[in-house]
Length: 210
Picture 1: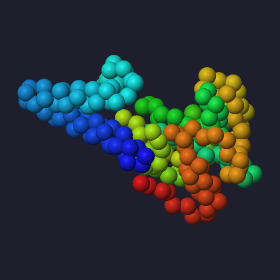
Picture 2: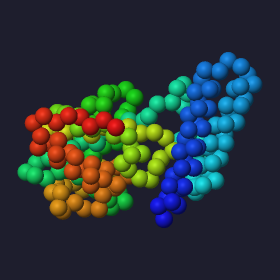
Picture 3: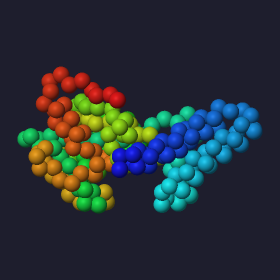
Picture 4: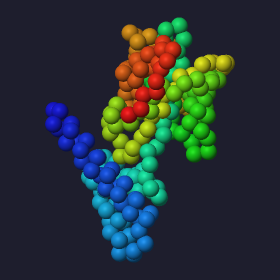
């Protein structure tokens, strides 16, 4: 089973690497023939993902082949808000729970994005107090995605607000480590939530960097 899981992830890693090499080649190459070769390598990487998943070719190309320039990871923020020994989680539309967070918008900072996501998903106004960790998502969360992601976990303090119904989450609540609900583990694991508790309890926390 472990070997099968490794093999299933390995082909995706190869596809991601081919896409990254092709994207860099398309950005830097000045030769028309090399450009054609890099375009074909990029197409092959997308075809690999389509062949091994149920994602349509058009969707794969939208997710996988539309960026230009040197490829860098996408940023995802996760806000840890702890009160009375419990951590705030929001219930997503699939019934699973996660730390408030999401993709970092291009026109705001990482900290501003964390504040925005908490307001949108939990209805709370917060300040960002400390960076807990910069996680390479592939090392901590599954399934593996077709693009690289850096997850930024931050400790936050509530300064106002209350939960309001919204388009992304169904509810919010505080949970202790021994009473965690079913987690959206592609976004945050029990290990990552435990790490946030440890950071909150520490007076000299050192940011975890993969």
